[in-house]
Length: 405
Image (cartoon, rainbow, N blue to C red; front, side, top):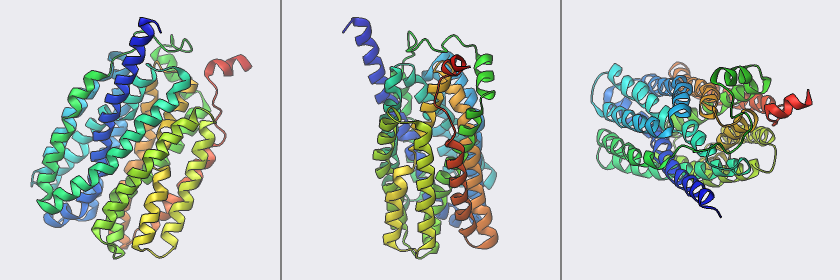
């Protein structure tokens, strides 16, 4: 192995390790927000819609800002973007911990953390890693990185619950804000690629990359399908603990179910990345969305018990974030990696529109109907729509498509 190849391989390995740990903290902390719904609203005397709106706004701000943070990452590298994102993330958690009025809570949870997430999650991390690894290894690299993030979702839940029950929710948020700052030193392990990993589409300008994406039917199908993922993930993560409590299932069980989702998804994201390098990614996405529809449908139609909740967590964990490496991998396969963080950020914006809808609608419907039944029904219907949208996507690069024409 030449010195250049050895250095490139080491840079990719370090970037994967540091990027994985950044996602571990960023997505792990976010996964625990649902545990704060009841203690925060009960201690402050707020309705569930207030908390739900704050988290929904967080996802909307995250989505709106993601194409711009992705563009900055493509232009200047991931390191400065992650540094700023980690600072905003930690500050937002600290603002959430203040016993203040609703607007201040919404500012911390919704705006500051939303901006922080846009700089510390997978569009930025995957874009950096994709430029450091060979095309045939990208899907697997994303799957491995995402599996570590899934472990973070598993690990952070018992930590957050222990702090909430053992001390109080304000102290728990302060502790999580300190953990968020651990992403700062990790940012320095993500180097920019000295040379592109592929010559395909690497000389495309920013405006041409946007034009190529917006004029391609598959870009819109992929984005609209990703809307469903955002809706389901945020709705379940935020409202499942309250839903299970309403059904007489204890808080400890709901925490274990969310942790189980993260634990099982370690394997789910790994194999999604692995199989995405072998089989059609759009076909795998279709199967995942169909699987989600079946799992959610059986869960809400059958009696809700401790056992059914655990089974739901295990099965949902297979599909939880398995869409992420496949969706981002499809972006890289079709439109290249030079502007991947920006294009992936636009696709992710659709995801976050779904996240906003799922988080806010869950609380809005509950406050008006006293039930989550309608929201569960919407989640099932969206799964079927997403499966149909991903099925016709063709995983061919623009160069291959133009050659055929």
